[in-house]
Length: 335
Ligand SMILES: Cc1cc2nc3c(=O)[nH]c(=O)nc-3n(C[C@H](O)[C@H](O)[C@H](O)COP(=O)(O)O)c2cc1C
Image (tube, rainbow, N blue to C red):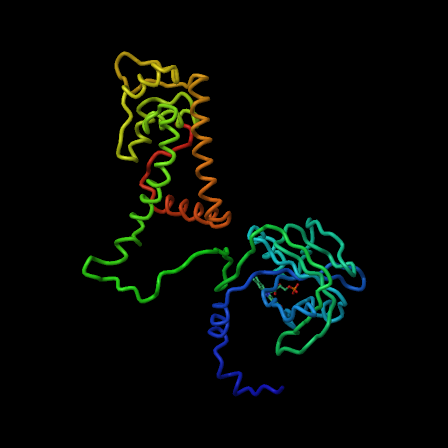
């Protein structure tokens, strides 16, 4: 087909690219080897499925690619659908003019095609058709073999890498934000409602684990902060606990000492300067309660999904860092 310059020039290429980038894709690396046995490959997100029977897939290669000759001749190639933790590999194969395979372990696939490891899945293909596609060459391949792992896939959207989240249902677009009862976003959708509500619901289960060992919230806080770093002073622990709006007092410490869970040394002048250490019994009790809390977390994450849980933690860490008001680090060693 002939393209006229008038048709082409009416196009704003940058806007066209941005528009195409609203389409979310995975990321692949396509590899092959030349007749002389050189391993070649590149990052491509133009990959798509064509047919189930026969099993056909396609992708397109820029005619400016250094690999155009290799793929124009190749009888076989392999598509690697990248896993979410393979961004560096994607960047490496998206850069021209260096040995992309240096230090990368590969297996030998059909036709001697190098197969990368650690991917979400891999498809070994035999070239079925090649079509001209404007400034790209379209390659269609018949899938001869494939394998897949449990690794979640890498996503590409709007020129950036992303992660695929499942089971999320967005609220309808036209929510009335200003009903008589107040802005909808200030109710069920308000961040400082959602975070504490999730916290209290989870914590009510963790509290039951404390209680089964006869520990109050503040007592468990003291013990767990000592597991992270033994020998903290009461005032250091209190400074960390004050985030919750509660305080740790010398009564808390005496109660723990009375049950042989901690030792402490009180300087004559200042009870808050008391330095606390866990007894072996205190450490064992704390580790048991912590294990019970981790089991509750694991149960919630199993329900949410592994990848969603990783993302939730990443986002929460980001919120913690963004809203930092200089609170002492919970689990870091005291200065
Ligand atoms: C996420 C992503 C997707 C890409 N998709 C394609 C593609 O589908 N086809 C293509 O030819 N280049 C694509 N590229 C660009 C090539 O990977 C890049 O131009 C590479 O340097 C080509 O290497 P080569 O010249 O050694 O072949 C993509 C790059 C990235 C980062």
